[in-house]
Length: 191
Ligand code: SF4
Ligand code: SF4
Image (cartoon, rainbow, N blue to C red; front, side, top):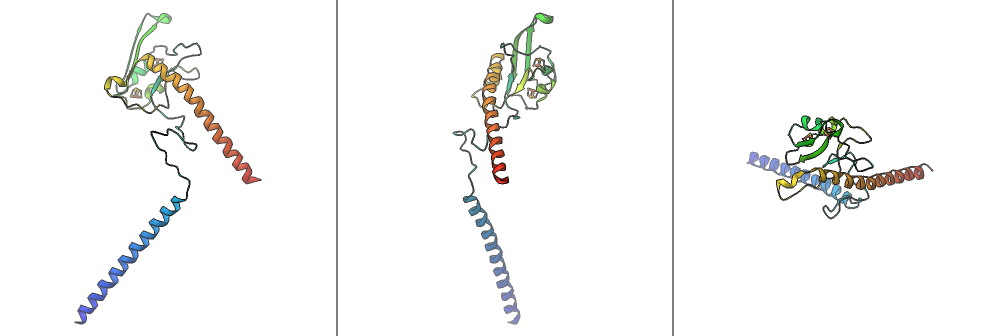
């Protein structure tokens, strides 16, 4: 009988300990949740919102490819084929006619259905007049209904460049504004 009472007491103590641990965990979880309830919300309602005052796509994002052009609208590509040769997934196809300085770029396609976003094509490009001839953009929405839709032709890549230039100007403005706000806050804290 004594053994029975002893075992029953031990089981009871263990149950109390378990309840205590459970309630402690619950308390910690609820405190954390309540803390977040009163903090500033950072959730973004994608795809209805693409950026917020606190967050926009970083300028260094390696997104969709683009072929850059100079101020006269001429492609910077010198048809050296370096990007095509280095691509490990054989995504890039380049075809040109003529020879030497008379070369004309007939075809430049990037098949993004095969691309592993390694960035080697951007690195390999020898052109370096402000930007390389092939560059990554901040575009990240690439969903299409067919594989063919992922094959970007020369014209599409040039359009990506102009779209990117516009959005980069906006992004740079937003980043500068954020930096100025941070500076103002720092100054107000110091004074
Ligand atoms: S990012 Fe890499 S895989 Fe994609 S096209 Fe460039 S080299 Fe090829
Ligand atoms: S590496 Fe640059 S310059 Fe050479 S073909 Fe590719 S995009 Fe054109």
